[in-house]
Length: 406
Image (cartoon, rainbow, N blue to C red; front, side, top):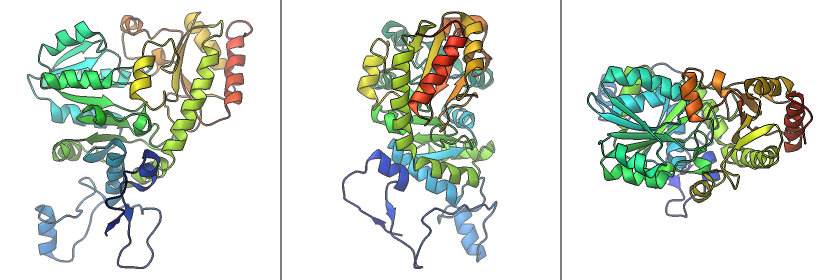
């Protein structure tokens, strides 16, 4: 197939989410499927032994076994690479499988990894168990603290890893600055871009070497698949693919097909969710039951200036810390009628969770407290419902959580 549009203007992100980097001009037959097919096959047959051998030896492109690669996966991987501006994309069976692959591929015994303190609880749990087995030293710092970060970099890390915005308090890391300083000491950089998605920011533009996603979340967008993704700009594709193959972390073709369908509406979903989140949090931040609202779109948020500079919107996630602790958080969640109680995020339905007992339950209480994850903290993933319905649902539940609202 010959791609059309070569030499024309660079396509915008919403177009890439639907078409990828190039239209398909057609094939030998008249009429091609508008929707890519699901190649639900475990293995692939060849016409001759010579053909089979040439593909196995890497002399000709082709597919041999779906743990190694699959045509449906390739379509989605190419689209993800285009969305993030990377040279390759790889799908994994989950977001944690993608993180595991980057750690396993990028680190060896005697290496050091430097991470931000604020990370998804599952990431912290994985690193706490995997890194000691690899013989890798783990340094956790506040990357936005200039002195602390510089001191940690002076210890010679091999990999710097961070999220921005962070889960669940939506803290912002200055990605360009953090990446440049890391590269200055020879470290490579991995950024978890799950909360922002490529619609709102592209860490490869800062120089990041690896961009990770729990594709289960916004990229899929409909709470019906579990996948992870790594997009990179270097020559790590074959090494990461080998880890995926060896660890059995390959993605299922049907899940990849669902992901491709979700990507088509990614831009409109994320922009609409971000607009509703901003509307809700500006009002809820003033509620007497709310001690603090965590959202980078608020003028008084510590990360607002950085987010305004490096993001194209502030996202559809926000958290509220209530004044009366866990009792108030439980009462709020109990009082919701429209918003669903669930631990995931990024779907078309609005969800609420309690990080201290869900996403970050594996952390010791004191560590959660040090990170600012209180017993009264609840996290919202804003969906596509009408914003007034959502506001009314939360305000009514806040009234039930401790007296009437404002």
